[in-house]
Image 1 (cartoon, rainbow, N blue to C red):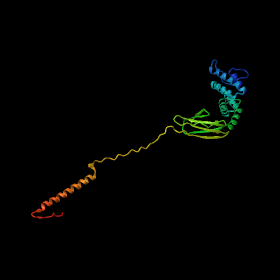
Image 2: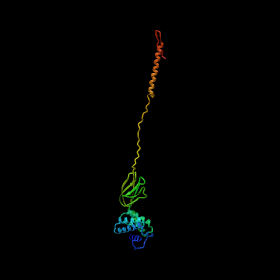
Image 3: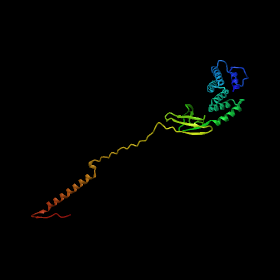
Image 4: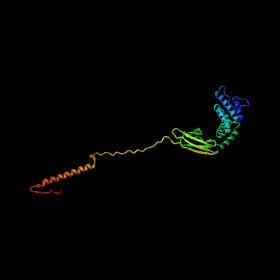
Amino acid sequence: MRALLLAFALQLGLGSVASAVWAAPVPAAGNTDFELAKAHFKTGEIYYDRGRYPDAAREFEEAYRLSQRGELLYNMGKSYDGAGDQARALKAYRQFLASVPSSADRKTVNERVVALERLVGRVNILASVAGAQVEVDGEKVGTTPLPAALELNPGGHKLLASKEGWKTFRSQVVVAPGTEVTIDAKLDSLIQLRIVQVEVPRKEKVVPVYKRWWLWTIVGVVVVGGAVAGGVLGSRTQDVSGPNLTLPKIQ
């Protein structure tokens, strides 16, 4: 670690204790980001020497963001390792190996990666909707579906998955070294579509009185009855002749 710090210091113009190990040229003077990177690197070096590893990791990470120097990923990994943050150390070491494949420290870093892979736990988060923001202990780690399982330090962690229009999913998980668990993050929609069946009362069609069957039945009976009565009376009137009364014939 010390050798790499000194090499980086030389490249940034902070000292001349060893030959530079970087192939990239030193940026031109006046580059504001590069000057800030030097300041963060120097501060990180002081923190590391005093055993303040979380502070050192923060400073090296900022120096890397500003300079994009791959060697700083190794410094970050060492600092996180010293702070006991195996998950972040593992991530930084892997990035270092990919960024600086010809590093003389490659064998040592590879061995540490293998050891850390046995110390972290893995959590698969399967969300019921895509595009949900996933957070672990308040830190955003991506959106669903996540490309791979999350590698977390052993212990308890708070999980959260949220998306506009959906009820936020919250859960807690306890991670054990070398284990893998799956969390089913079900998000319920806040928009409930309800199909309500409304029963409309049927109106009975009003039939005019003159169209009702019973009216015309009564009328028919009355007409027929009147005709019969009229016929009977007429017959009686016609058959009366002289002094003798003749009853009408039954038809």
